[in-house]
Length: 99
Image 1: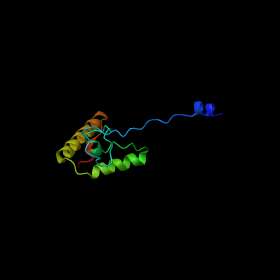
Image 2: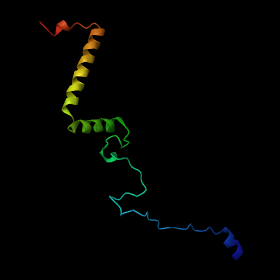
Image 3: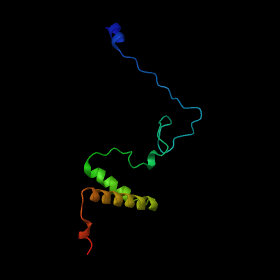
Image 4: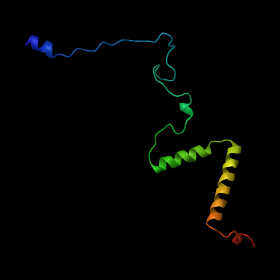
């Protein structure tokens, strides 16, 4: 019986306390082996939230962040031009807005 228990007994894996040569301690609880992007913590799209409600709330949070004013003006102009082109294509009569 003693011989059978030696055969069926699993060996434990060796554990090593490896520490890299130039490792200077843990920063913010991260592993020295983790490969994270340089700007990962600043990205709002990094979290994988599912569902329409979460996507809308993330979009609203992004809009609250103060951004480049020129970019907002440029986007407004582009959207306005596209709307006018669309109205021209569908032959919309703009004279109803003017007297």
